[in-house]
Length: 130
Image (cartoon, rainbow, N blue to C red; front, side):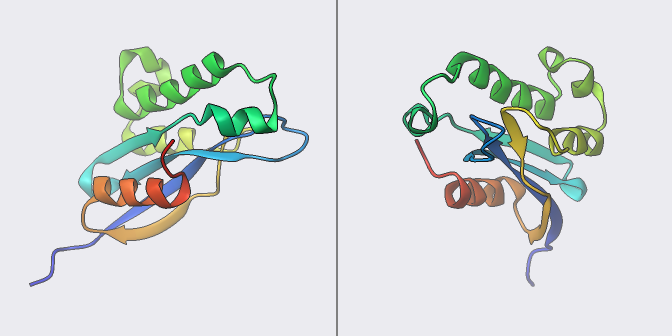
């Protein structure tokens, strides 16, 4: 008997050093699986790559924003009011269109057996390791 597959949705977190140029570097994954009550963020900050785009980037501010994504996904108090919302609402907020330095890709669906394993595979494919 094959394990049950679960519908999941994910978005890629992008760092856009200069919004006007629309160039970006993939920095993380947000994955939501309703049936498994799973919402997690995996991210990294590749400073060397970012400095190739611009040397005027505030790495500390970017790091704080990426950590805020994780805090919201985890429902931590430090994530503010958004972190208190139900999982689906938190995912929708995290994956919503933004025109700031941190943006997300369109949302993509898929099927998985283990959402965490799937998130880490997507992270390796889309972001890679620093």
